[in-house]
Length: 346
Image (cartoon, rainbow, N blue to C red):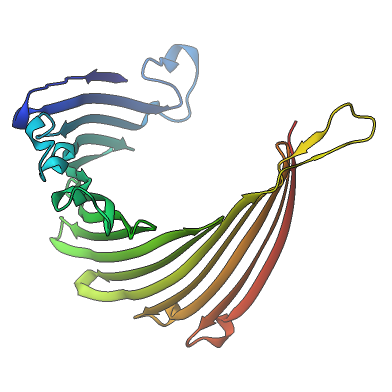
């Protein structure tokens, strides 16, 4: 194996403040021989019923680069203006290139894999663009990402995957911890030998959730929307799924400490009496192009964790599920389960 890494940091002021974190090169050869090795001389030492030869060999060269750029970090005149969030703006880039040659039973395959670009844009304290004393919305963080990956097997297959998404987090009215997330993914797979599209895949998912605290309780409602579409050879539609999943998570965390006097003990035994009660309720409505994927699913599960002391814990758990298939009645069912666990640590 051959491995080398170069770490380089370049710093400047203003728009030239760019940091290259690492540059990586990795080479890994491997090979397997049948009935011996490359230096075997069986003529004088043994009688072989099969010829000595190499079964498979893999050679891989990998190059990777990671860079981070904060263009406005040194702009101190932004501190007292509405442009202050730009000081925290950062752009992270990851890139990789890999060449692989595989030899198996006399046949050679060459593969080229690239991951470029792989970008992450990050910006926090976005609310300071319009106010210095946020009341309605605060703690606004924005992350945007984009990735393009390709994989090419010479004279065989070409695959390209692209994805982008965004993640927005903020606190609404000073008590609603909110998250909005969106992701888009595509996949294209081609047969380069006959110049034909083998597969097309598209996926979109959107999630909105918000959490609020009331005394020792935390409530987190959430809704997720998923869209999947897949076609194969000759643009034949094989899957087209739409799913909506609303859910609610309820969590309680409280303790009631007290001391217990044990017989023949010189001091009290302290019991923390901490209780963590976590319950999740969800309903999934799934509709599809294929008959088998059309169903409704209701699920509720709960766990009651009782910490008697630092080294004794007792957990009760249970779940109930209703699966309702729209077209195949024999696949519909309802199920429940219960469990308990006692943990003693020394």
